[in-house]
Each structure stands twice: as structure tokens, then as C-alpha cells.
Length: 113
Image (cartoon, rainbow, N blue to C red):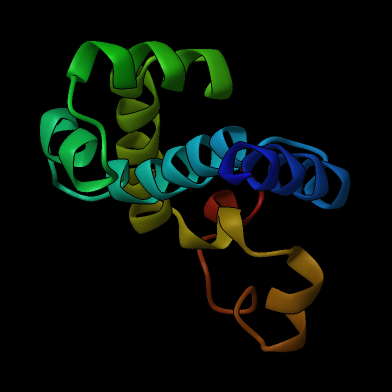
């Protein structure tokens, strides 16, 4: 009888969320990993924090779901953070910056890069 409930749950879950519980858990873990990779944690620390037991299985699933390796993703996130610090107006919509008067006194080269 227990087996019936297990498959019934999986079928209902899949109907509602359009993925199996395992796929949902994997997706949730990878999204959390993306957030953590933007910090100073190592890839191994991120792997274990989000619930994987093997760095290689984590890296493989991450690449499959995110389209790039965790190392590449982490490097891009760190480069983006450096760019935001260096030229913050580049990451703010111009209409919002103008409304708040931020483009008035800024380096025009920075605002238009």
C-alpha cells in the first residue's frame, strides 16, 4: 500500500509543479548554489552546503542545469561584482539615474559605457 502512495504523490506533484520531486529538489539546490557561488565560498563548500556529497556530481548537474561549470559561473559573478563596484551607473537604468539626479554629477563616460 505504501508504494501506491509514493507513486500517487509523485504523479500529483508532477502534475502541479511540472517536474518530479527529485527534479524540483535538484533545481532548488542549483539555484541556491548560484547564490552561494557569488560569495567567497569555495566550490566544494557550496557543494556540501546545498546538500551534495560529491563535488563531481554537483559540478556535472550544475553544468547540465546552468549551462556552465560552477567555476566559470563563479568567475563571471565575481567579475560582475567588480564591474558593479567600478562603474555602478552602468547597472542602473538611465531613466532611474536621471530621475534621481545621479547622471548630473557623474563621469559621463561611466554613465554611457
